[in-house]
Length: 401
Ligand code: PMP
Ligand code: GLU
Image: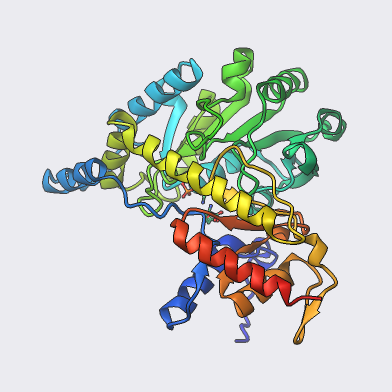
């Protein structure tokens, strides 16, 4: 459609979220009756636990259906504070926590609050799809930092130091990572925390997968390994992944009071408080029984073991064993330059298209995360679907030459 009244510059170069786009395409094909195995979505397949749903039902019945404070109800912020004390042994005050409409909005508000045009934000590659776009929407410049797939996608600290300039405002860390599932070591977290204090920048830690770890450790953060960095760390988290609550849209930020106050001010002029009923549910999620988390994590671990083993059995695929989240990010670059019946596999985009068309398996091309050598499969789906998906994948790949 031609449209004569121009749109804002900031939206012209903005691309829609590729993860949400692939997921929507897979769901639409499925709705039309196609036999699609959807390994694209970063969304746990489990139902939200009953005790959490009950809290929401009670909230509705009690008439808890009005505006709340913009930053969220005190009881939920208190539950967040208790979690952070428990996990990171770090104390936050009520005005150092703001609840948002999903973790995504928390991250967006945070970047709007600290980034001015001309500022640089360092983002390790591969990155979650929305970080560069959010930095750009704030007028900032993403600065990409390579990571080392052979060393579990660890950060090269020398390279990081070389990227820090007077314009560096923040570094975004996501551990466990989407898309790699990698978990940074305590040494890496500590070294980064020290660098942030020395050079004066923020570390935004996207901890959305903090509880989904398979290494036996609990959540870790620069503030827990180097408490002196507290005023440099802005924690972004939420209940979407840990409690299978993606549709409820509750996330939060915790960090230095001026940043949280600024993020709250932005929220007061954009979306106001997050949904009152979902806040009550999130309070129950964080403060109530945690057995459901253990059960989900152990199911994810079983699936991880299965999918990594199976992927590495397939010719031409190399897959690391992720320590957290629910994604695998195998190297599929050995298929680049091959073709089959009109499909030319130039990179991850064509490979993902080919797999959807030929195998009816939906996955996300690595290029969306900044590294074209890989593709991402989510294993937040049941084992029989994963098994069937990988059989189809193997058959489709074997036709490429
Ligand atoms: N960070 C990462 C790395 C994610 O994968 C997601 C999932 N969408 C989010 C943040 C935001 O999650 P939500 O907005 O659903 O809380
Ligand atoms: N975070 C999920 C993913 O990476 C959901 C989609 C999104 O929010 O981008 O698939």
